[in-house]
Length: 184
Image (cartoon, rainbow, N blue to C red; front, side, top):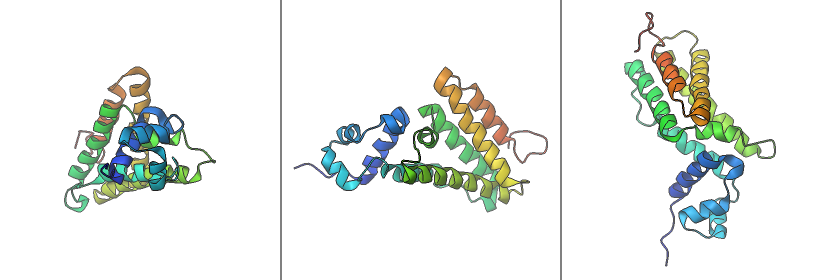
């Protein structure tokens, strides 16, 4: 008798499939093969590919935000750690699963589209909360711009294998809040 496959393992493998192949290219059959289930067993846990997207993005957000320092105590440490985690993921994986999904979900997949929107809004809000604790002017706008620069750098990683734009985006992000423009 097979051991049951934990939901967490299914979600982790789904995230990797989405990273590798995007929403359209990933299939429930491929996921079932990766986790050692029959497709019908997978469908009893997740009724559709679309139903995996919120779980994948919730896991990704949790991994990104877990155990950050309290911004009220040291906002700079929280900011550095958050920017570092985002950059490390992009360097290691070459892309953001949320952005990759954003280009694959459509009006025909409204739950997935809403999950992507929620993922980016929650990440931006977490960033803005850290900046707000540091009394950075216009924290939501700065967080939005920083996230856009980091995410945009993945274009060059994916198409050119070039990490330089990501390094520049990280450098800019780490100078936020320093009046002299030095890294925090």
